[in-house]
Picture 1 (tube, helix red, strand yellow):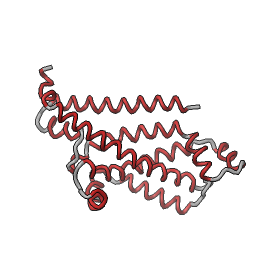
Picture 2: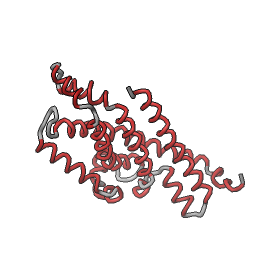
Picture 3: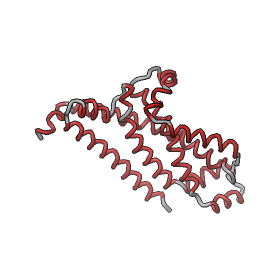
Picture 4: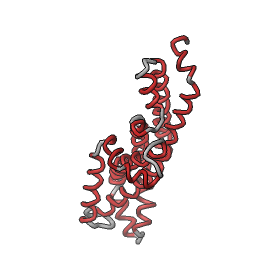
Length: 221
């Protein structure tokens, strides 16, 4: 236990930074999830042969999403700083970090969802159209329902990626367990803090994976 003496002495700070990580992850996932889901539905339904076919719109949206995915997160932090300030009133801090996190994760999640929805059996979609279901009905009762297990897997992958991105949010003054591992553990040669930070991240990752596995089993039919 002596090895972890410094980590134990700053346990309140570790708890605070863990809460910061959960705060950034939760709200970033919430907004990125909503945006990514809408974008993915538009990508799937407007592609060639889709229920709302519009190849020009699909091409433009697809290229824009791919462009956003290509921008490194650290660069994005600086590029959208004025927009971040406009939205939340500041460029620094946990809340400010949520904006670039959403910008990065929404396109990533959109592609995950697009793959999930594209895996839905085309015959089921055709049957729904033959019965006179509206595009909205097909989206809700066919695409989202049939693709739910894949959606859950995509959400888990996105959440784990998001946890990793929060560690870089410290470059704009945000907190988080990743920042603690670097600023205190690595820079001050406190190896016990690094190990504790890693353990916390691993617990969060395994919790996400475990929850995803449970819900995939419950929704697979």
